[in-house]
Amino acid sequence: MKETGMDQETIVYGIIRDVASNDPAFLQKSRLVNCDAILGLTDIDAFPYLTTSMFSIPTEELEQGTYQTQVIHFAGSYQAVEYHWEDWIAKFEQLLKRMYWVSATVHLETELSGNHTFQWDSPGAYHAPSDELYVHCEWEHELSFSRARP
Image (tube, rainbow, N blue to C red; front, side, top):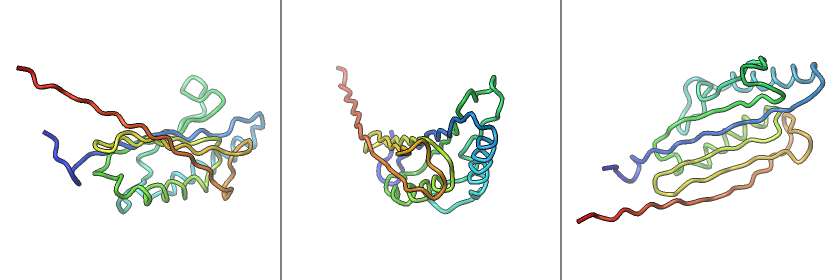
């Protein structure tokens, strides 16, 4: 039986889509900036943590998952991070401010509050470091009921 309160597990995962471009110099620059931003995170962080080890930086190889757009994915499990969600979002947005991207999506799966999806979209062709951020939140709540069998 799962405990309630601060013992609940929360899963956070998502992706950051980088910029597709026909300009090889721009692609190299933007991907190096993104890589540096992620590698600039610490390996040990105060709760709610956002660390380098949560992220995967794709290779440039076509057959290895990068066609036109790099998809940077990340994930972590926390103890009830939803009670500190504003702090986690602030850390994530600080990272996004230092990166080039078209969109970013974060999924928050909680045991008691349902599932939430947060989406950042660039109002232009892409977001460059230090541009303003735009976010909208979609909320879904899934409940399951079980019936005791006689």
